[in-house]
Length: 323
Ligand code: TXA
Ligand code: MG
Image (cartoon, rainbow, N blue to C red; front, side):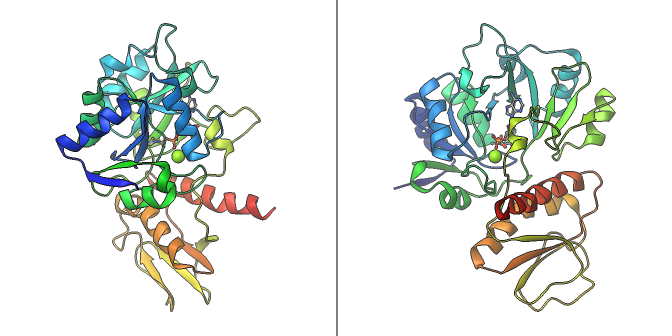
């Protein structure tokens, strides 16, 4: 039986003691729910891969309370420092070289010489890391290749008995996974767009290259190779109408009539609101058994870049499944 427990101090202590004994616990972050393990325990980190059916070459983000702790695990540089000061705690992940003497499990790096690190801002996540007294390795708490969870119920639906304890901390406020930036070269590379936008990054550190698609056989972010964020129902992007049997995922003012199911990411055309709603609306349509989901056009500026990235991956993954 999987327990969903409110993120009270007492329940956070229960979750921390599970993590301490090498077991897993799901917990809320401001981006999406994570499936956590003690990042210094090889066996525990290995069981994350098993629970998610995650390919072993896909590395895992490690979560800390503050930059001083992060510095014990990775080697910082000036630009990384600027970004950390500007956006932590918050929805930004930095890829940096591992320190040789770190006790973080090598499995988190999946064979790379780097480590993905972030300090989440959600109070339950922070309290959990603090109570454990160690960093927490955590990918999104869903089966590999499916939609990320923004509620405890999404976690339960995707992982079921694979996770025995889910700490609840409301609906994830951001709703999209963190922005991932590779800081290992002189020129930083945006690997996964998120609520910390390309414009935000450039404002702080100057030029940032964008590499969000698998452009070769050795992408900087192994996760880019995978089918990602895919609902089971086919997606049709940039729709200007809804066909019979199709559910409509709208954005802004709807200029055409939809007879079937309809959800609006943001009636007032607000990208933050749309990002927060995206996965939960896709989860909902997915559970209703529609023939397909027609998605209206989303502007590709600011946070729209991250939303479109997730939509393209979802639609692209289905293309791959058909082939
Ligand atoms: O918002 C988030 O980032 C959530 C919450 C739980 O923190 N976590 C999350 O983790 O989305 P995950 O595993 O679902 O996605 C992490 C992405 C993957 O695409 C992975 O390949 C990439 O980050 N990644 C992790 N470590 C990396 C590394 N050392 N080098 C390059 N990419 C890395
Ligand atoms: Mg994920």
